[in-house]
Length: 449
Image (tube, rainbow, N blue to C red; front, side, top):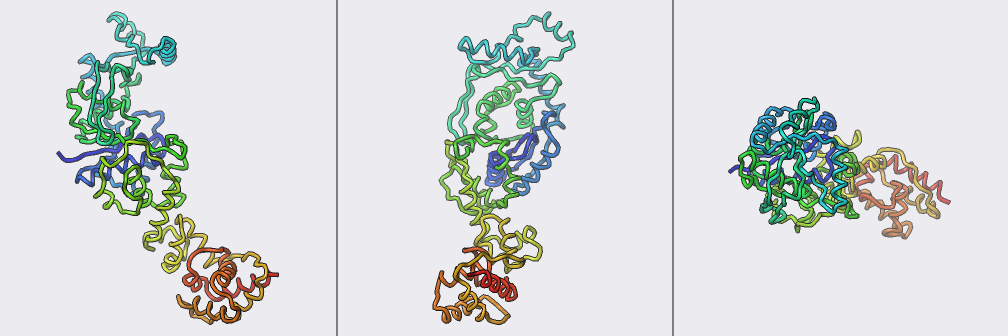
């Protein structure tokens, strides 16, 4: 059977790194097995789903390089399929109407908790007589519909977590249809997975109980639940062990992109996080070739921005000019990029170095260095300059002043760049040019006491 997987976010916010990890796992699994990666938008919650979030999700996936083979498929376009499946469940006696308000349900939950019972739904609506239900329907107040779960448990061999089981009597009968007639994700997702021929559902560990419920719905619809293999990825946690969420805007893909994180770095980091593999740069094809759900740890994986930044640095150090040209300041050349990329953590930092080589900077005061800087200025060679100029100039300055190494280069670097470390001066000096070097050395020498 050909592999078919899906990434099915709800467009209620921007994607964060936890969502991206799930999307990436599905994409890599599909590519590893020559299957299809489907994008589906679970958008039946019309009050929270927004068109701008749909657009943002698609943009983020494209930025990460995750091209989908089918979609985007929108659940709001498939309401007829859900209505037909709901009728089948009603006719089978598995979907039953309820009229309790949220306030009534909350009171019931509190009452059960006081009695030491699990706060699950008491199935009071199932005990209604036909006459009571007829009067409720006649009142004009539309019901919402719950699914009557089976007794016993449902179990499966999870491709990440191993053997898992959900005891269905310990779970509330889920609401599948809202009072306005729209389906909830729990139900619509099952119908979609069955009708779209999904073979593997790969998602977060927070869906384990939900998976048990959905397997029971599949059985009620006449399907074989083991026909869809399940894989639940342990959740990502922050530095303090807290779960990541859409509310952590700093870890949204949009924010990471704005900060200068490279998509290749994020993909390589998320693909290997929680595995024994080294966190090293790799393209999507390489990641797919080595992707194995069985190598993912069953423990939560700690998302460490410091590790991501280190990987981002490695990616940038080998990134060609053509890949970043449109993100560099106007006028930036390939020679500039090759000179500075080895000193960048983020691509956005290139702007600072462009100001160093092409803009106007004010050197910091260099106490006691005036005579040395004047000596260096006097021995500045004429243009044209190339990669050998810095070495020849340093030799001349060293012969005149007796300085070497850091004692020679540190004041020169500070005067010319305003920084005490950075890209190799042999590469920077031709980019800065003689006129700017003369101006900055003169300014620094004049300011030095």
